[in-house]
Amino acid sequence: MNELEKIHDNIWFYIAYTARLFRNTTTKVFQESGFDITVEMWQVLMMLWYKNGLSQQEIINCIGKEKTTITRIINNMERRNLIIRVPDRKNRRNNLIYLTHYGKELQNKLVPIAENIQEKAIYNLNENEISELKRILRKIHNNLIEI
Image 1: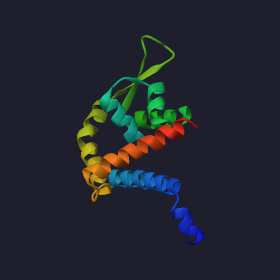
Image 2: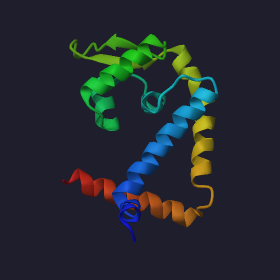
Image 3: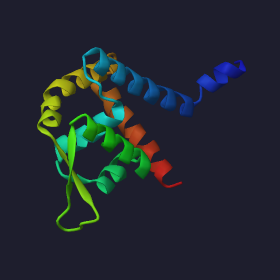
């Protein structure tokens, strides 16, 4: 096995490369479908579709990105009329992030696109393999949190 093959046989390489490919493919397909939505925006949208009115800190905690990165993403989403910031009545130092009407409408358009990408990604995996993949990825995730 040569040096390049050793790199490609590394678990870290496969996970990082696959995640990047998933991200790039999703952004590309969204754009080809007429939606200027990045994967980072997609992550925020998914959270808000599940629970509208999250604080920026809740979004940071769930997505796992730095505060400055989330601020930039939210600023971009606000400029694109996807979300609005509303002052939190309980803590005036915080804003709650809410979907606009347009942000809510995108759920019916983007979810089928993302589901199609996921279906293609796991095309030749059976249910047991999918469950095992999720289980293993959760274990790796939990192991890394402990570091």
